[in-house]
Amino acid sequence: MYPKYSAALGSDLVLVPLPNMGLGTKSGQGSWAWAVGAHSTRKAAATSLLEWLTNDAGATAMANANGAVPGTRNALARSALVGPGKPLHLFGDQLSRACGTGPVTKDCVTVARPVTPAYPTVTAAFSTAVLLALRGTDPHKALSAAARTIDENLLANHEYSRPLSSS
Image 1 (cartoon, rainbow, N blue to C red):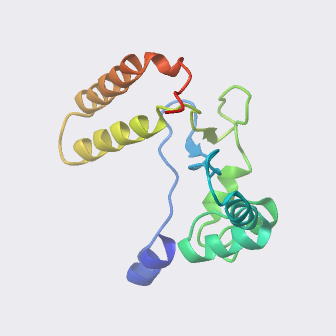
Image 2: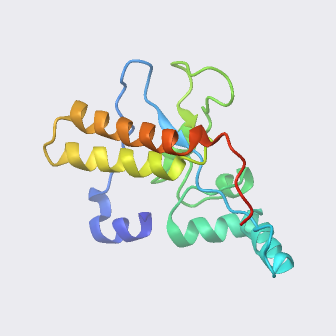
């Protein structure tokens, strides 16, 4: 989205860190995942596309097209947008201070998003809560409703502990 916003706002577009809520500023790390379906009839073509999208050239092309942070270290290092003195330098700085699989501390910034089949529900519920709060709803009420939605999804799906059926 950076190219679109940059074209519209020019030098008025500013990237700022999220607020410190007690354990330092934090940002989500990770993205949606791509995969080749087990029953795909075009596995070779799909695999070839994914291999290109996840190599340095593909990651660079994708980041240049959508303004996202490049998905490989080499593409990140060569980015025209991400890096010291560049418009999206904050993203590169945050990624260099990932929490990884260790504990979340004041020293790390990016926290891996949860790996769960419920992630679409988590994302939708949280997004709704943020929008409601921005429109004047009490944030505690909005987030409590999001938590209920997530809990209901987990309960309805038995905490995603059952294997998915192949039907």
